[in-house]
Image (cartoon, rainbow, N blue to C red):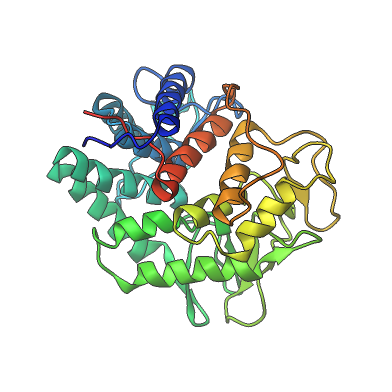
Length: 345
């Protein structure tokens, strides 16, 4: 693939993106291909593996992709399906995760990355893996509530006889769109519609922001409510909702504008990392560079062309999550605004 350099600005963005990707690999990846969450006990997640696999494809970094895939399949694979264990903790007995529960956002990212890798490098085996995981997501991780199809966040612990716990940030619109051609099914469109529904109605508090976690009645009655067992915040999960909305082509959604207005409000001394949707209290510390990058993407995506605050491009994030969010925001901007991120070859 030979991307066209449209302007000096886009060429500079390409160089900066590549430098940041190289920094991510040095700082947050082991030699074996394990992505390390350095702010959370050096654990690894299926989502982190999937994020990095997609980035490796976009940067045409086959060697890194192969290492990521080998580690993921060797350490997170489950025996009964083609989904992945959500978490690996260093030092676990036998070198395998004791907790075999899944995280559906991680599975979606891995399947999406495999589908793109199959196309970029002409590898049918990657497509076969993507098909297997996508099929199991649809078969095992989708549940009907009322007249809508919802994603189970994981294979265990989110569904009982009366309620479903849901995470609006697990609805990854560009992944749904990519996987339609891998495993054709009307469910992808139905899941997209459910995610949009949640982004419109699961909004609370003074700023009308979506909550990290919501709970729904299994019979489909009533509206989604903030999950009582979890902090009622717009925080490190829900910050991805505007990222995926803009990336999926839904920048005009009200939630994108609400998030952009919150993050860029001049009533705050600094861009808040989170807000409590029940009390209105905001974090006493500033948003990290990853959230700041999403805030900028959201502002541009919803038409606020001159956000009052912009991410600090010179800062190299020292936390895994901040770094990967900023890289994903760069890729989303490239897909939706025409900037360059992918490497030439």
